[in-house]
Length: 158
Ligand code: HEC
View 1: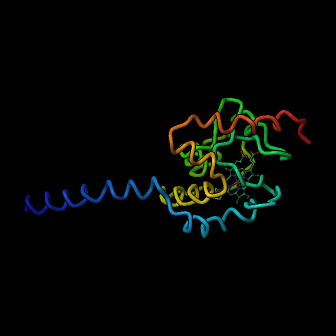
View 2 (view 1 turned 180 degrees about the vertical axis):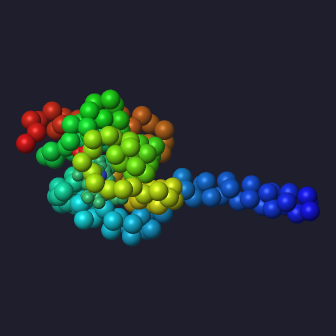
View 3 (view 1 turned 135 degrees about the horizontal axis):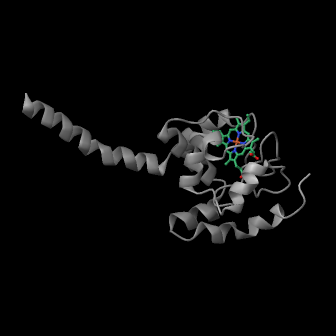
């Protein structure tokens, strides 16, 4: 009996790192399908426009709440003012529970509870922010890549 349990445990442990790696990498194609849940509010791609939410082209590596010509909630602007940059960790925390991570955000989305779904969507977002994504992957400080994006945030909202 004991041996069986042990064998089962070893099996679980052996597959765990593989799973973790898949989650960390994410599949942009699966993310594209998932993005349909975001597309009612967010556009992405060349010439994308702000809708209910800001367009998400180039969002990866950018300071939170700093997209051009979008009227963010004060909560999101304050989140950006604390230095929050949309890297893997920030995006994952926000997409898991938007109102839990940025209390007062006007993003009315319940969240993606599955880690692999978040990883896939993030991988998809990265394909529209290639420079920033590469920098972050190489361990370069994401704030460097995001710095120019802070300028439009200084423009008066409205
Ligand atoms: C019901 C509409 C809605 C849906 C659905 C939605 N969002 Fe949002 N999203 C918003 C709004 C509105 C904001 C601006 C939040 C604020 O200013 O507080 C936002 C903000 C964001 C931001 C921060 C952008 C920035 O420039 O700082 C990201 C990233 C984001 N959304 C990603 C997603 C992803 C990925 C999905 C799908 C999994 C999604 N959103 C689904 C409405 C939505």
